[in-house]
Image (cartoon, rainbow, N blue to C red; front, side):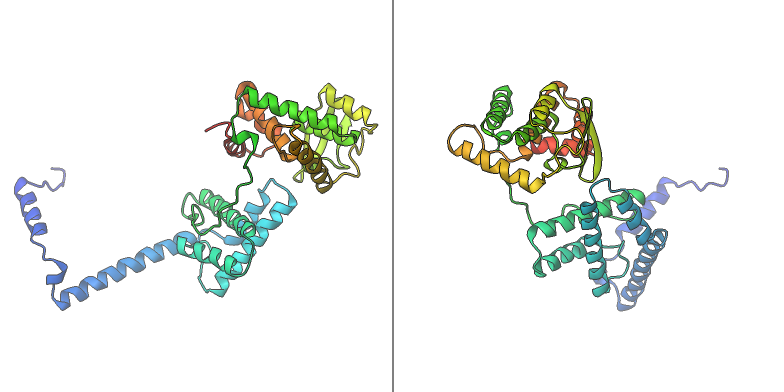
Length: 332
């Protein structure tokens, strides 16, 4: 009907019988096996050529440039990503692998093992693996899945050592714990004589700033502050108690924390808090970044608005904030 060929029950039975009657591969003659082998080889090359044609639409250098241009983190992070990609390019060239955009899981693992064998530290290997996984995830999205991220989920990447033993957010996140932490921070501030350090600790507690934000770029206008953190400009509002502490320290509103470096701040904070913890004056042993952790947890618990917390922390995406809060055991 209308030129269509109708298949009857008799035809279906004939086809079924034909299929069921097909001899096993072991029963084929050498001539028949040779013919099938030719078909398999043609299919293999057809598949490979189709893949090559798909990949020809995309240029590695263009994808790399676009990826690096879209990194909204510090210059040091961008440099680390560039180094990882350059190392991978050299590995691809040395091993004559071909198209850098067409790698499999085995090649990804071999590259990671080559980094280990070259004597790179575990943290550097993790950093390079993470950078390449980020790039290939970017390429995967840009090409609608034609390029695959073979670094995703690799078991070759060294596991990170946990530094969270004894941290307050690994014990129990409830009002009692948070009240203890808040009281601990106040105790730390009260035991420190340096008024500038007191002001910095209070600002970290109330605003959640990274330790690297406290330098000559920190500016205050009214109750608003502007600083540079991870290479990006960040603005926020200072509570009255922070403004008062800054005034008491005799600090100007321009170049507020000139003379401070993240290393100096970390070391002084560690010195004071370790002594207080050993003497039983505070509940937990804190690092500077734990003040940011405390801020993130308390802010999220106010209204569970992850978007607002992401903005308050200066994260580039909600996905980063979600991962951050998961690491603090605030969300599952």
